[in-house]
Image (cartoon, rainbow, N blue to C red; front, side, top):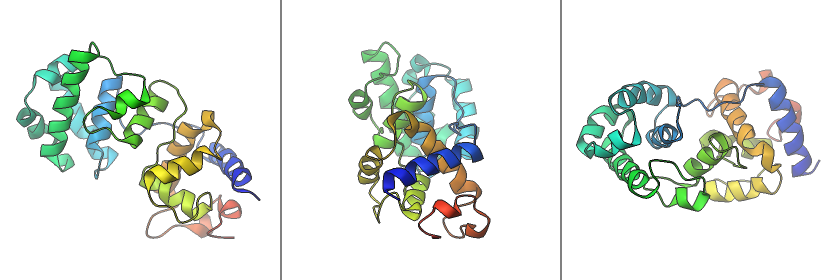
Amino acid sequence: MTKKQRALAIIQRLKEMYPLAECTLDYEKAWQLLVGVRLAAQCTDARVNVVTEELFAKYPSVQALAEATPEEIEAIVKPCGLGRSKARDISACMRILRDEYDGKVPDDFDALLALPGVGRKSANLIMGDVFGKPAIVTDTHCIRLVNRMGLVDGIKDPRRVEMALWKIVPPEEGSDFCHRLVMHGRAVCDARKPNCAGCQMADLCKQVL
């Protein structure tokens, strides 16, 4: 079985196991997802959702959040960890959206990468979830699982994993595939104690075969 054949089989199996592929960060507007994914660095999505509920209630628009000081933002986002740097990035990002993009999030990958605090993972998440464009989000779950499953060989660098997956994952499947990897990583393929015996992917997984 080639890597591409394995990828297609895994994608289909994940669809059967997790029919609904969704981002686990709560948001209604693109700028809110941009904020949420920055806060999610080294923090659980569940905690981020609690924090952003308060943050978005107090600052309900790009304009409002752009006018807040980094210190005011930090006071709310501190529970997510790295509060000072995250607040600084969010503040700078919202001001750029206000001043250069009329309060809207750009739908261009390179423009997203140029925003403070936005890396490839965040930019891909926005492109896939908000704009419905081809995207591969290489978070820790994705990197761990595609290595275990044999879709990549010992690659841990997020950008290199992304480039390798682009070669074997159909573009239209990338975004949902990555969401389903997160779901499977949380439910079954745990980082420390993967439940290989109870895994419905075992017959496709190089780690088990």
